[in-house]
Image 1 (cartoon, rainbow, N blue to C red):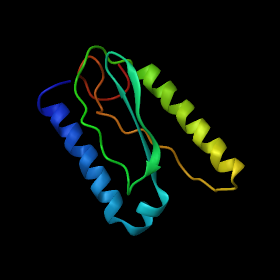
Image 2: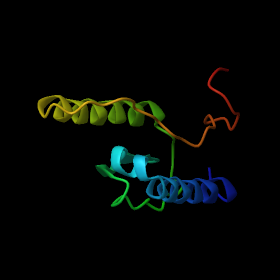
Image 3: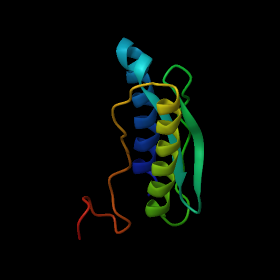
Length: 111
């Protein structure tokens, strides 16, 4: 993914952050972590509140190890949920936004 699609992803990350900050309730309740995956899987930001989240500038690079990135995200969420449990904090959902295209460029999740 490069060119307009990666530019749209970067614009979407910024819009996501702006929308979170603009929503009083979401800005108090939502925490965001960011994992990139290209040649490697990298945790760019640990979980942080919308007020301090600065979207990274992402770029296309190499392969798309989405499975490893999902596994990394699940582990990051598991650890965060454990912190919530230890501190008696209720939590609700986990989401995984991504660019929506398979490595072959088609939309959707099934061949």
